Image 1: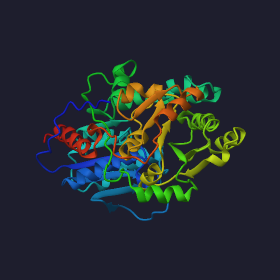
Image 2: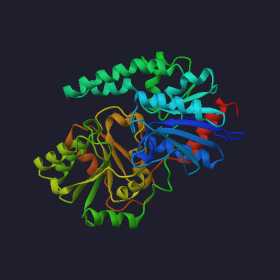
Image 3: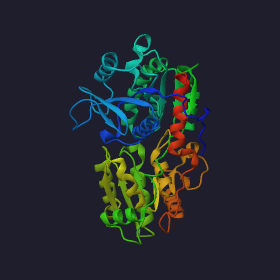
Image 4: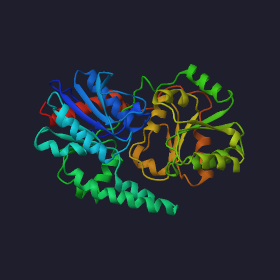
Length: 405
């Protein structure tokens, strides 16, 4: 597992005003890459920088801007929570034009969230624009083309449509930051290399807050009691959006194979999505419904407890991933991770991660059986390259360099 940071991670020489844009933050009940972006933003604020983040409307929260962990959060009224829309592009640009009280030193865009601000580079925001890339429409399209489901082939057309938009958006940014080596490799190949040619780039691996994601015996006991797991049970944890691409069905099939030999195996599925009903039916068909527990969508702060309940983490994803945070979080807890062999190029040969073909239930089950702990986790397996503080330092240097610090 390698993390390339071709930038010095020294602190910026002066305090900066960073204007960030993200369509989703943990306040929306969404984790993953957005949660890591939030960790970086509040880390910058903790180091003395002035951080303002524009985000989509937050369900259940009325009023305007508010402060959280030193960051000024501005939910934009009239926007669709957690989604790009014409209203989002217009509202973000309008806010920057009318309400930005102090000049920004740099704009940090979580994916293409700040694309609506690009027209202001000639007037209000004559500052560097940094694009944090954690995926691409091209990779999404390729993944769906490889799916056996015709519906996914049809959905790939929408990704190709967005690819044309991406080509125009990319050219407006001054620097790219990739969240993992595999994503950097995507952008080094056609057609993305052509779309982003000449734009400086760096790879800054996402960082995990090891003070949050660490093993706790009390959390383990509480979570296992909540879901009816006993001491002798061997609990597998799957955590991701419940979409066919993420491989939850493959995890259920591997569980059924394992239980044919050892009844102690259980599966805890964390997450929600359109595949949930189909997964329940599949578990019933494979006669392992009683051994599968569904936690549903949970806030990120609750994830450490659910991971502590496990003896192994499973992620038989069926396509490409940039840098899956669920695996890093599980490693931080100390869980061995059994992943699809497509992730070998992402994580490499690192202690605690093994690979198996996700569509081969017997092979994936064998990898789990060889890896699952016979005792609670003893220590974190997360490599030092993926610490949150190192990640924050690298962003501080990347933004500061662009802003002239």
